[in-house]
Length: 106
Image 1 (tube, helix red, strand yellow):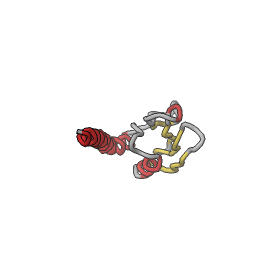
Image 2 (tube, rainbow, N blue to C red; image 1 turned 60 degrees about the horizontal axis):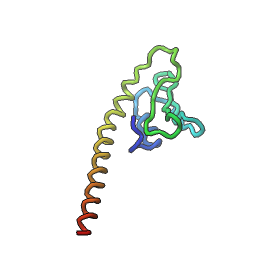
Image 3 (cartoon, rainbow, N blue to C red; image 1 turned 90 degrees about the vertical axis):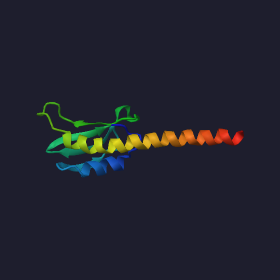
Image 4 (cartoon, rainbow, N blue to C red; image 1 turned 120 degrees about the horizontal axis):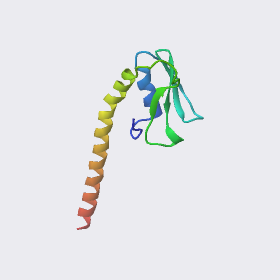
């Protein structure tokens, strides 16, 4: 998921709203930004290279049976449509600002 319009606090709040998520903790000293349990499996919100525009949310243990992350995905997918709208709105605002700046010089 894109991290452009969402903070760690918002991600933590969204995770806490998902049924089955518990023990949500912020991590400050690694690329794993948030650790949490989802239906008994340890999971993380990982930011690759520590400074990226995307987060990866997954189970920590690849040997476990597959964890159905659909409830978490659905919460963030619903948020994603708002993020796309906000990004579009920011581009429109920037274009209008440039237009009016150029227009004021004429």
